[in-house]
Amino acid sequence: MCGILAVLGCSDDSQAKRVRVLELSRRQSFLYLFVLKHRGPDWSGLYQHGDFFLAHQRLAIIDPASGDQPLYSEDKKIVVTVNGEIYNHEELRKRLVNHKFLTGSDCDVIAHLYEEYGENFVDMLDGMFSFVLLDTRDNSFIVARDAIGITSLYIGWSLDGSIWISSELKGLNDDCEHFECFPPGHLYSSKLGGLKRWYNPPWFSEAIPSTPYDPLVLRSAFENAVIKRLMTDVPFGVLLSGGLDSSLVASIAARHLAGTKAAKQWGPQLHSFCVGLENSPDLKSAKEVAEYLGTVHHEFHFTVQDGIDAIEDVIYHIETYDVTTIRASTPMFLMARKIKSLGVKMVISGEGSDEIFGGYLYFHKAPNKEEFHRETCHKIKALHQYDCLRANKSTSAWGVEARVPFLDKDFINVAMAIDPEWKMIKQDEGRIEKWILRKAFDDEEHPYLPKHILYRQKEQFSDGVGYSWIDGLKAHAALHVTNKMMQNAHNIYPHNTPSTKEAYYYRMIFERFFPQNSARQTVPGGASVACSTAKAVEWDAAWANNLDPSGRAALGVHLSAYNEQHQAASNGNVVPMPSNIIDNIPRMMEVGSQELEIRG
Image 1 (cartoon, rainbow, N blue to C red):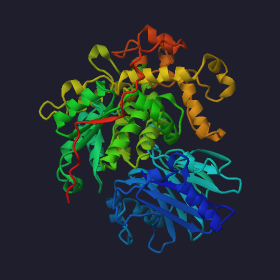
Image 2: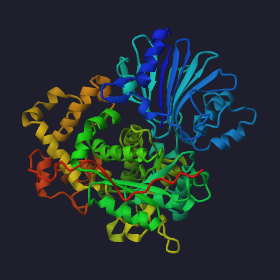
Image 3: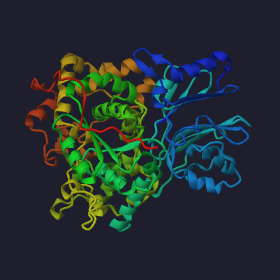
Image 4: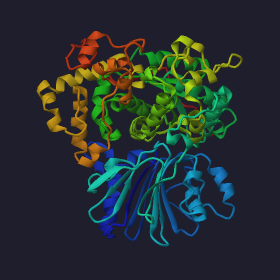
């Protein structure tokens, strides 16, 4: 992922302002990396046109040699700074027969599409992206973000009347009076003076679909989504937890890698990466899947103490105080650092499946197909605040790009058009969560995965890396947050008041980095059971006494659900943790991995 920063229409076009914009995209913040430079370590670019500034920090994935940004139209009148990947750029180039492209970058098509179609071209883009486009002919501009919000983007307003756009909060929080998340699937037009939605798929209305389930149609749609994400000019791999979603991604990528441009450049054998505490469920399953698929597997171990030591860095980079997101982001953050050290710059990951298919364990309690479908719609619409934010920022912190095929626009349209009766979890009929996805890839003649992996119960990433990870975080927070602090939490933090010591601990760290009211309002709130919305308690009132985002809070559903002692702890009582939960075991280790084979 790249990093973009734009200051549009400021009152100061002096050299000093140019230096300030450059500083914001590259400056050091005491112990931390350049503010946005971690997102794009390969090149920096800054364009100024009067009182408009467009800055870019590049992570080169496609056309590393000539695709530096900002990008321009032929006459240099249209200027674009982009973060993301446009998977159908070759198809779009063929439509633009009268245009001359200055680079081989996939994002080069954006300026030319604007010249050809005006502001109504964004829905033609197939990919993940956020961009700012400046038309210097009339000083108008547009800003757009991809359909689901895979790439991160924020918008802010300064007292001088300027509009600020940044990939991360830290690019604008010091200079804007107010700022907020730029909504996914939207476009900001200076000509209109506001936002308009460009992404309007049929499922967005939440009307109940009726298309019959066809496993081969679903399988084909997902295979296509994975295949198009094999587009790369740099070394890449897959994140493999050993769960259903990441294992399917790895299986399809391994099947179709041979014969691609990527295979010719970097070799035909897929690399896979997994992280976890020693003997964790994910490490065991991922190793088995890797052996089955024949990938070059890289297994990284971390200790609870390693994760705790990284918490402040994680919160600084992912810019949230949401408990679930921090729990899951920390091992992903540690893994991304190891992946980058191997020379890998892009990974394919499995985010989005649980939202589309109702894979979280609280969906077991959905009373009917109408409620089930509407809840999946709500979950997809909120992804930019949770899993997309985690996948994007945890990897971008180390200059690694994460691609998510489950959030492919075409695949979502296929999956969300299926009659939700087929998605309903019916244990008495042998239909567990995400049954229609599992069934679509249950091929007896040419199996994609071992049966027990294909039908492995949903395990949230923060649980799968090792159950003692969450237990250790709770124990650590209890050492730093007192009961008296919790009694006054509603006075200290009236917005999204933390209800647990763990949440309070994360909030303290977040507020130290981002003390502005606008910053705290970018983070969603509310109680959660097993990554649920309020629907979990509405569907089963008994879960109201066990509000924890861990999948193990799904009592009566998760095979390793919390026992009564853990329930007591989640209700505010401190349960002593074994001394081996928080330890001083030496730092993170890489086990059994091989160096990448870089082929000319």
